Image (cartoon, rainbow, N blue to C red; front, side, top):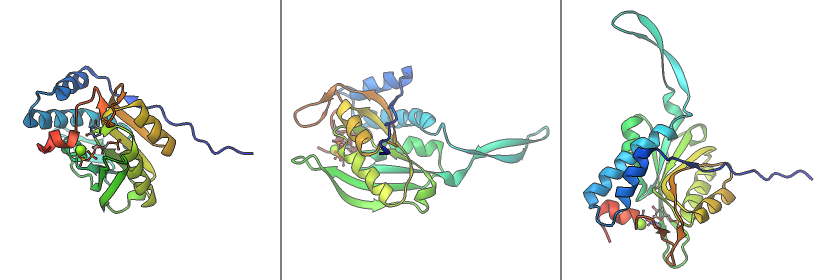
Length: 216
Ligand SMILES: O=P(O)(O)OC[C@H]1O[C@H](OP(=O)(O)OP(=O)(O)O)[C@H](O)[C@@H]1O
Ligand SMILES: O=c1cc[nH]c(=O)[nH]1
Ligand SMILES: [Mg+2]
């Protein structure tokens, strides 16, 4: 009998010193909303650098002040960002600074505090999602339910080339996402110890959405 089991891609952990430094300050309980936003934006710039490493280039004829040459530019329509609301929007800003022409999809999900299942409340995706590389952004991969649900939905809509990027993850969240979607590369800045009794990431940074938007 032929097995169709796919070996999951190992998670990519971004361990650049700048990322570690900024993540440490992000985690601090005393970091203000303004500081938290600034740090998430800066971290998203650094993450975007890695998340876009595989993007295809196309040749372009340009003229320097001295002579014509063939340069390279991103093949624009090939990529889009998908933000998992709300907290994903914090990661979008820096990504869009670097890839300003990329279309953006939004999937609204919240985690039911009782069941810990992801509840969808919004979905709006760019056209031609099936032919684009979809870079999914959400700062937190805790149980993994939200990320797995978002990617299931994106695949239902035709998405095939997916990368999931987050600031913090847990071994449980990674296992959950890999089990549901072994073909999806996970990129994270840290694999934390695990989950507390409320399924918050520990040591973590608290509730990313609340810290970004100053809600409670
Ligand atoms: O891996 P999970 O256990 O599913 O948890 C992770 C999810 O929790 C947070 O969103 P939240 O539900 O707090 O919504 P918010 O962004 O609106 O605050 C976070 O941004 C993820 O989407
Ligand atoms: O630690 C966690 C877990 C889920 N969502 C968050 O914002 N933080
Ligand atoms: Mg939240």
